[in-house]
Image 1 (cartoon, one colour):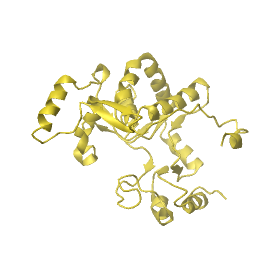
Image 2 (cartoon, helix red, strand yellow):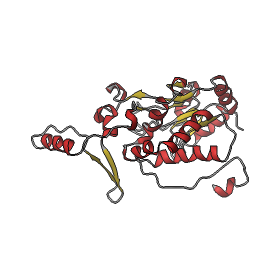
Image 3 (tube, rainbow, N blue to C red):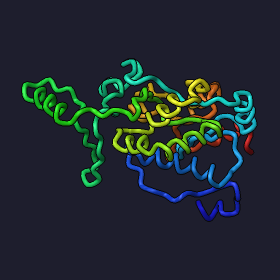
Length: 265
């Protein structure tokens, strides 16, 4: 990949690092990309987070015109924590367990340990044990008593917002340090930082993604993997980006998007 794109001066590769599912690595990778764009003085109006399983379903011209029309707007989905149980995190106290517990990833065991454990035991032995752990290990609190927010891991922010994020974590290192022990912090970090900032009124509750969480088939509880039969859904979506794709499962859907939605020969 590096060799094939070496001749393109507008493509930059960053040093890789390990990202375990649910740990701070995903946030650090995003922050590293923001830092590179700013410190290398790359000219940009917006920065958009994409992963290897995202794909645009609108042309570059459409996306550029859309962002120009919504100048100075930040796009990310959010809900206050604790959130309405209908929105998810039912087994995590509306998201509070993620923040208030110390979450530690044990690489050798390939599993997470949460202290105190967030599970509300209902057994004769479990309930008093849980209460004892809660007393021994008090719940954690966000720095500066900030209001926590959570939502989708994906976002699109202006240059000014990216500068704010970049500068904030350097002048307030305790904020980033706190999230090193938050479970799946990429679903809370940016929402909490931006919605407690002077830019909060510029945020639109929309991550610009076409994602189907309702599927009981491909992916199970994970987002639906879009395939050829799903093209009408993608074509009618107002989103800019769709998630999630897997070329090993169905690569034809990507060709259809290129030809019919993006105008790529």
